[in-house]
Amino acid sequence: GSPVRLEVGVRDDDAGALVFQFAYRRGSGPWQIVSDFFDRQSYDWTTLEEGSYHFRIVARDRLTGESLEAMQPYTIRSRARAPSGVSK
Figure 1 (spheres, rainbow, N blue to C red):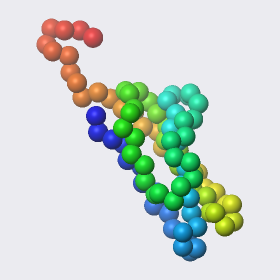
Figure 2 (figure 1 turned 180 degrees about the horizontal axis):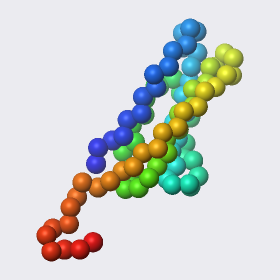
Figure 3 (figure 1 turned 180 degrees about the vertical axis):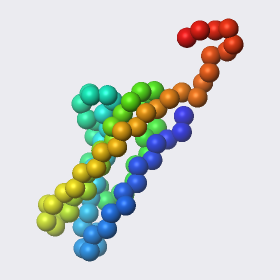
Figure 4 (figure 1 turned 135 degrees about the horizontal axis):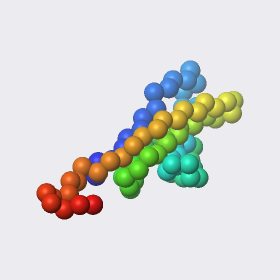
């Protein structure tokens, strides 16, 4: 399947001061951190299965410790279709 890309659109007046954490969880399960406070402002998920997810990004200022969090629900559905006359 196609990767899911999350990109951060945030600006800080202190050049290079922001770091980001990317995480996801399936349904109401535990958060899985996939990138832990690096300066990279995007992340591509490629190993997700069908289902409902929540994605979370935390932006943290390295100098002040101040942080901001955003979450987004996302549903992954298969494009595959069962052949005619075959039930799932």
